[in-house]
Image 1 (spheres, helix red, strand yellow):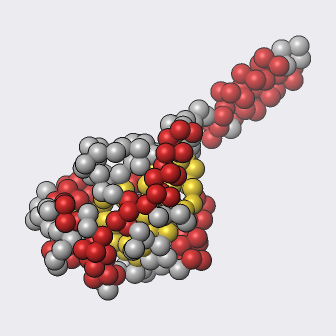
Image 2 (cartoon, one colour):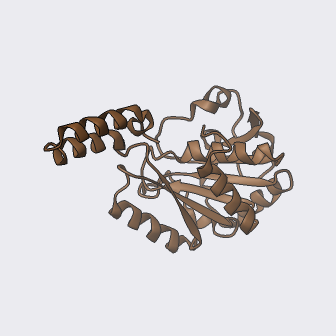
Length: 234
């Protein structure tokens, strides 16, 4: 997880406080953009301030499970949104409450907006914040949890955009899906874990452009190499 006091998480946290949001949706355009990691990191940041937080995993697509909770998922019973089983099957780890879609039964009922909204109202009696970790917006299939179901309960939406992975077409599709679902108020979280580190690019630029000035080129190259943070994704 991202440390709770990192600027990126702090910015998201402050945005939630400013808008007084309690139900927050996080999603991306494609697999592997870091949505689940950011969701858990945000939950941890809220817990630092002694808030009760529930993470609801609504990512029904075929993906690698979050290892953070995977071992706990094996021992819990099936549940659904139409009765109190969704409250009884919340489990905790490191202070984060978690409800996994892996054990969800009667998925068709869960897609009914009225049933889902009533379940969230019940859960809000126990938790200060509910974070929805959604499937990637560009993956359209019958297994996905539809965005429009969230329209009555969701108060804040964050779209995770990973540079080097998400392209303009995917992002356009995601924005279109959000607007179609009535989730028009959203913010963007930009991540760089797939973006090429800046160090090698700077070193190449210096070598190419300053080849006529070997002394300057050598000093700059040594300086760039000492900045180890430039050689890692962030």
